[in-house]
Amino acid sequence: MPPRRFSALAVPYCMGDPQPEFAVEDAPPLTATPRGQGAMQRMASILDSVAAWVAERVPALVHAPDCMAPIGVVAGLQRAGLDPDLIWLDAHGDFNTPETTPSGYLGGMPLAMLVGRGDQSMIRSLGIRPLSERRVVLVGTRDLDPGEATALAASDVRRLSLAELSALPLPYRPLQVHLDLDVVDPDELPGLLYPARGGPSLAAVATALRHLATAPWIEAVSVAHTYEQSAPTTAAGRRAAADLARALAGGCPPVGSNRCARSAARWASTLKTPALT
Ligand SMILES: [Mn+2]
Image 1 (cartoon, rainbow, N blue to C red):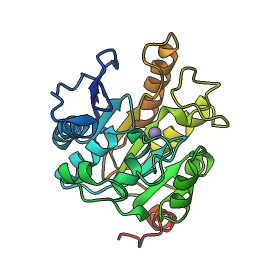
Image 2 (image 1 turned 90 degrees about the vertical axis):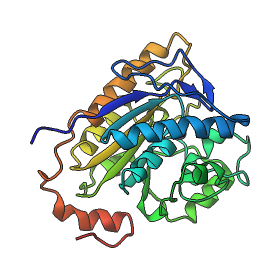
Image 3 (image 1 turned 120 degrees about the vertical axis):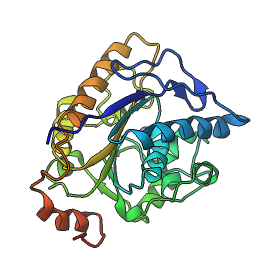
Image 4 (image 1 turned 135 degrees about the horizontal axis):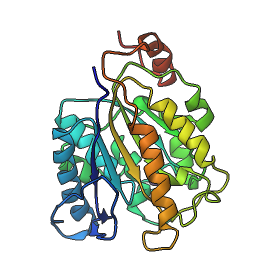
């Protein structure tokens, strides 16, 4: 069986507004007409288009300027009858709710929304069944708001360092991966919108992603290009994104050819869920 090839898409919208300068090589842009009043409704209409695209094209690779796209990816996978575990690499938790956020920034809430916390209007409008926290792993997170940190600590979401992820045997289970580029240390990736010091190097992230790419069953990958799109540093961000996406999506082996079934039990204990047989 040949490796599965990922279908790629770029989503040139940021928080509901068109961002025409957002372009990714080899990823055709989504064409959608944002509908509705307010950022939340416009975003939901764009993510509905992302979901429709993903549902037809698994395995899918979706590039976007922010961390809302994985909501559309989850909706698309569920519409395709798939229910993967979610691995989310991000310097931030994206686990705020309207109660915990200091800024009101929606882009800091998508993971909370996906597990059924906070405002669920977008989740409901996309027809998403919220994910079980026990099937979510957050990797490389180091910059949390106080209320967000408290909520995350009390949740069933598992947190891993990048090194722990790199050492983890990967399961024979469907996976969805979300990569926010700001997981990389800002010294290595200039122009990040929300830089968080003390992160791993680009090379370390690439190594972890190459390990992740050996997972036998990745259904979808989303990449958040959270750097200043118009700054001169954009070239560095684009290059890093392309390299990392390649590391992640380039080597996905065909389903059924794996040798990892026995790692499923250990993976399940990482996720605190019963092992699938
Ligand atoms: Mn993020």
